[in-house]
Image (cartoon, rainbow, N blue to C red):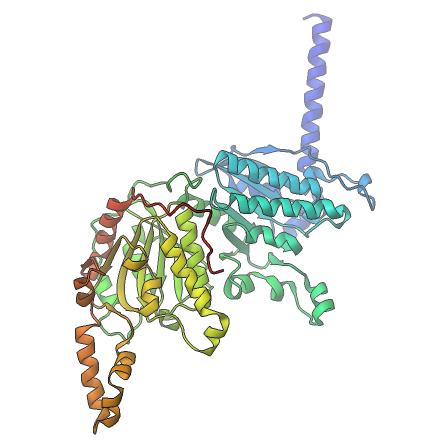
Length: 525
């Protein structure tokens, strides 16, 4: 090799070593001391999260060399590696996913202009490529030293979340603080998971709350996982730590298609599609006064009893989540009798409508287990807008064009019967078991109205009431009356629920149903 060739080769080697050194330095984020502090707080670093989340060796980073724009207040003398957020793509369960992970070791992961542009680019690329995007949020909020640049990038990100909604799945992981306007980014995505003890989110922190409303509070009391998982309903799941958060996200993605143009992945079935469940005869008793848990029914019906529940702690009178039937992904919506008798209230209606619309957007068939006495009534519910909120359930089911299969387990009264996907709301198949009570209203209320004068004049009102109740029940409040009018397709043995659903699902899995041409509907939000 000539001297000239050697010099050229040495020059390349020098540049490569310089490149590698630069990358290594940037990948350290805020430095070892900041990394140690992150670990001490019970959190993984931004890069550790990505390494754990993606299939080994598949993550490809972009924009590592992005540099912050702000120069005021000494920022011109600082280096903010990757501007506090790591962006890229990789494979999860062998399928492509884009992700961004905020780096709290770099000026508390604050959201600056370049930081925001990197996240917006990630969402844009995910939408163009037709694959899910996962955001790992861990940020002190807006970088105030960049003022309008940061504010504008919030708006740019919100715009992208909305335009991407219903195109690809968007999943937000709250793995630290999410404060200020940035809290609206997860709120515009499809699912939010929060980590216990280390995460919280709010639009104004405790100091500002105290200054404005003169009330002392803490991060946890204001916007911790318990508040958003149980009371506000903002969060879909609370997990113990970062690793569980990432594990659960991988599980969720396994149920979902990459985009709205594709169907969810079907796994090789590992459970007999003809399997019957005699236990269901015991769980759902003929005594209407004895309750049961929706989870027990679901576990008997779905493949291997595996159920991925969403919003478990919020509005537990309605149970929603993902499962598989003969390998097909399905969305489960079930009334839960032990809580408020399974009635639909304001929160349950919101919870159900949002889940139904997600499933419809991403081609997930809906399986509905109905045991509903109706919408919850009373002064409090009316004041909270049960009419408006309940209408969301009606709207969501009527709008949904995916396969819809309903099983009436027991009570199916009035508007609740319609709102849990009756034939009239577009159910493709409705099955009932012999214990079902399908009617306009409960027999007690109907008898009070129909026989009011007779009961008032009777010498023995109690005996007359019981007689009329039995007459009304025998005539109207049974699945045979509904089946005779074609509101129920078949009345089945409880143990046959699984095979009956699977056969119905197989025949309508390629269902074609189009909405009228329009810009969009006007849901009663």
